Amino acid sequence: MTQPPTRITLASDRYERLAQIRDYFPQAAGPDLSPPWQGGRLAALQRLSAANAEEYARTRNQLSGAVTGLSPYLRHGCLSLPETVADVRARFGKRGHKLIAELAYRDYFRQGWYRFGDAIMQPMEQPKVVLGSQPMPDFIAQGFTGLVCMDDIVHQLQKVGYVHNHARMWFAAYVIHWLKIDWRQAAAWFESQLLDGNIASNHLSWQWIASSFSSKPYLFNKENLLKFGGESWCRQCRVRCPFDASYEQLQQQLFTDAVGDEKPITHQLHPPKSSPKGVATLVWVHDEMLSPSHALSAFNLPALFVFDPALYQAWPLKRLQFMADCLAEMPEVEVWIGATSQVLARRTQGRILTQDTPQKALKQAVSELNMEWRPEPQLTAASLSDHQLMRFSRYWKVVEPTLIR
Ligand SMILES: Cc1cc2nc3c(=O)[nH]c(=O)nc-3n(C[C@H](O)[C@H](O)[C@H](O)COP(=O)(O)OP(=O)(O)OC[C@H]3O[C@@H](n4cnc5c(N)ncnc54)[C@H](O)[C@@H]3O)c2cc1C
Image 1 (spheres, rainbow, N blue to C red):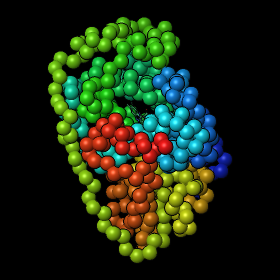
Image 2: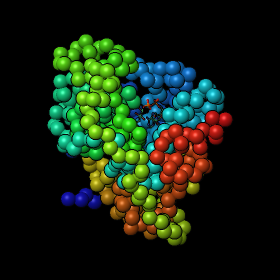
Image 3: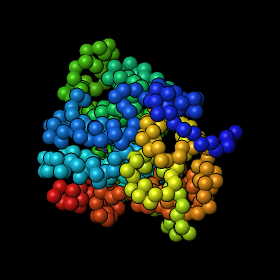
Image 4: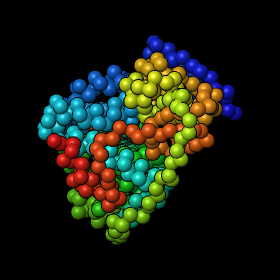
C-alpha cells in the first residue's frame, strides 16, 4: 500500500537520526551505519584533506595501504569529482598522478553509463573465456564459503559496506571464475550492499574481471593474496586453498576455450530529452546531490529530497542512514517520505530543476513531470567516442593532458 506523502524533520542528534531512519524503513536489511563511516560534506572534506597522494601511489594496492575512502562521498555528491581532482592537483601537482588517474576511472565508468545506459548491466563485448551461468547460491550472501578470505570480505561488505579495491577484485574473480556464477546476479547483489554502490563502477568492474569489458579475464593466486593482503587470512584457514597455484595452472584449470572479441555488443543511447517549459520553481535534490554546496543551491529555490520507498526499499539500512547524515547538513532542504512524483507535483506545477543522472530509476520516478536536467559537474570537456570508452587506456590518453597539467 502506498503511504500518503509526509514531510519529516531529521533529528539533529545523530543517534536519534539513525534510529529515525530505522523506524521509517523497518524492512531495510543489515546493521546500522558503523564508524568510521558518517555521511555528509564535512566528513567528506575531512577525508579529502587527509588524502595523501604520494603515500597512495606507493601503497594503494595493499589492503593496509593509504586509500582515501572517498567513494561513498563521491557516490552521493558530497564531493564533486572536479573539485576532488582540483584539490589533489593543487596539493600534490604531478605527484598526484596516480590518485587522479584512479579518480578518472570513476568518470570513465560513469561516462560509459551515460553513453550505453543500463545496457552496461549486460555483457559489453563477447567474453574472452567461457563464463559460468550458475545462479547465486545462498552461501555467498551468508558468508560461508569456507575460505576465511572470501568470508571476511563478505562480512565487511555487509557489516560496513566498504571493501578495498583489491579485495573487491579477488572476490569478484572467485565468484566468476572459480564458482562460475552468473556475474550479473553477483554484481547486482554486491552493488546493493556497498555504501558507494553505483552500477557504473560496479558492473563495469565485474565485466572487466569477467573479460566482457577487457581483453582477458582477471585472475589472482595465493601469492598475490599474501603479497597484498597479508598472512592473517591464510593462517586461520583450514580448507584446501583453491588459489594456491601458478597463473598458468589456474588458467588451464579454470578455462577450457577462449572465445570472443572486442567488438561492442551493446549500444543503447539515451532518448533525446524534451525541453522543459515555464519558470523553475523548485529543485529536486536526488541521491547523487547530497551536498549543501551543490551548484543548484545557487538558484535560491525551495529544494526537496524524497525518501521514496519505491526507490529505496531494497537499500540496506546503513546506506539510508548515510543519506540521512548528509541531509542533516542541509537544513534548507525539505525531506519527505512518499512517492517522488506525488511529492514534487504537490509542491509545484512549474518546472523542476535537478542534476542529470544515468540512473534510470530516478529518471522514471519523475518521467511525468516538467523536469530540467542540468549536467553534472564535468571532469573534462573532452567528448569521447564509443571506441575510447571501451578501454580506460584510450580514455586516459585523451583526458590525461588536461587532468595532469
Ligand atoms: C568488483 C568491483 C566492484 C566495484 N564496485 C564499485 C562501486 O559500486 N562503486 C564505486 O565507487 N567503486 C566501485 N569499485 C571501484 C573501486 O573498488 C572503489 O571505487 C574503491 O575501492 C573505493 O575506495 P576508495 O574511495 O578508498 O578508493 P581509492 O583507491 O582511495 O580511490 C579514490 C577514488 O578513485 C575512484 N576509484 C579508485 N579505483 C577505482 C576503480 N577501480 N574504479 C572506479 N573508480 C575508482 C573512486 O571514486 C575512489 O573513491 C568496484 C571495483 C570492483 C573490482
